Length: 374
Image (tube, rainbow, N blue to C red; front, side):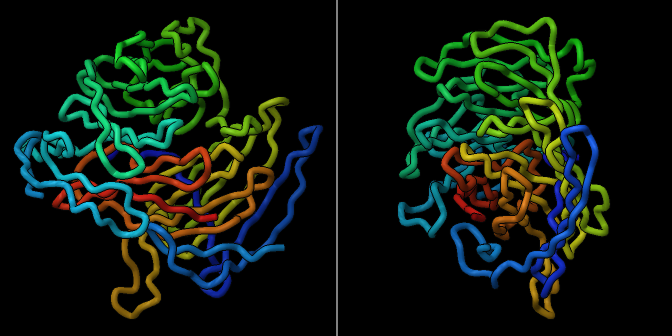
């Protein structure tokens, strides 16, 4: 099973006019009591958008190992929403892919965005991080020392963090200017008895966390490389505006139902729980994160209805933008789903200023694309 398919699943329901989103909200009171309210929203008709189809709520190469590929990057002229296109291989503007006969095929495992807006791709088969500028050009690479790195994230100061949960069982902290290793934070310990169940790496201020089975996060240390021996936990992923911890899960995949929980960071009390229902079966959650303003981005994979007789549905990702205060749907966009066999860890990342960047794989290489749902 691909690691990304094991992620927490969040589902936004669509029921009105085939595109509307039905929501059920339960809010926690100051004393822990809960009230409830129900609303229904009918987004406007889909319109063209970068990287996919958007609907907003009304206001009020050849297969082979790394180094074997010879496919070249696409011409400089790119389609709207496309940041860069890189072929398979080990050259300066290529990314590694491996399709062994007796093991899982692999492609670049993860990606992140730096404070300067550059995209960093974890090209683990070539043992490096590849940095790509906003003009789509490769700016440079950073060599890696870990054996099986699977996730990369970037702190506010540009510090790079790379996780290997299978062999080195650590998070490497890398200086963004020199590429030097600042330290390694061990994964295994209190709260993480088995590192294979880790589902992500997160940074909040100076703290470094890893997520346990799409649930609680365990603090393993800080950006200086100092390990935390107490390993305290937080109940979900921290939003970038500092308000909440968020957690999502699919409660009925076939029925298209999922829940989003938000916990107040100051009081540690639940702020709200919102249920979303969509008119297609859910497969897994592809994204749960927020931008700097607190807008929550929720992506779910499934067989999205096409509105046509043939085919009536096709694999895709529905991306939702949610209000940080109550989880209300602000907008949505439909994006293509990677259906190739290569194993990856994370294909989507949120920009600080809003919107997302994701990688889409084809036989010729990787297309890095930008999209939004606001």
